[in-house]
Length: 411
Image (cartoon, one colour):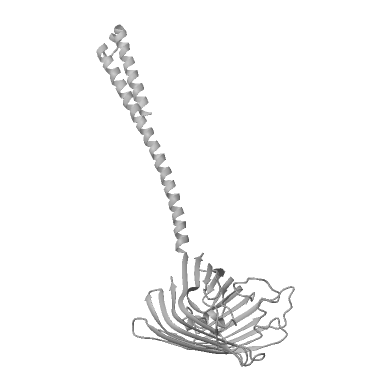
């Protein structure tokens, strides 16, 4: 605007000068006598005006260009901010999500004899007994979700790999004393016992090995720590058929546990289970209720682990049969660190009566012993020997001996 006014003023001045040149008589009568502008000076002024106008046009072009640059810069800044917002959201998802894995494997030789005759399970092979892949996402301090898959392959049992969903739950942690999970999650007893035993990758704990329980199931689960972690509890209401079989039934099973911690590392725990094991369906009538009671006394701290587990079960394998039956058994274990390198010697002994009413002489005797070698953080191997014999006074005599290397990889 100022440039246009300047141009107008100069043009007006030139017009006045032109009047003086064109009408000298009227100029002479004026009280002030301005200096006459010659044609050469007029031409020079016109040239200056043209130059000034060109400069103004150039400045205007630069102003317009700078405005375009400013607009483009603002658009680029907005786009960069939008990209950064997306990256921040992605970073939050990544930071709030954990990926964990655990693999149990072995390379062993099995000698299995049924009444003195070798079975097809005998031989040497490599097995991946378990491979758990777990994803946990934390929505906020209270809510989280977990998905854990279970891969297994055993050369001695089948020729195909199996993949299951072992855990899939939504968790609400309202306090250390009250944590709720909905979905397939750990049951109260077996994972708890595994934690104190410490050698799950070599062998399942007692009730899991004998199939008088399972480690996870579909339902609603609650648990927590009380009295400054001196007391812990867990209770689950589940379908009853285990995590591999999420079928519905007419009733749900209940499993619970209460643990007492008299001092650091020590635990005394009792547990119970009652239900139909998922067999009480709409078209099938059950005749008995499966029940199990559990007791464990254990100590696990530093290089020392020692403990014992006992169970008593009724009708676990007789929910659908007219006959009833009972079983019980115990497991003793211990391990001791050798030096500061993490090498650990371990041993275990199990003894169980599998059919106290229907076949009282049927027993299972199991033991193992070995040495564990940590290779690095998250990787350990164990050289071990395992012996298992199931027999009665009549026709049953199944003996399995296994020797080799067992390993665990965790990340």
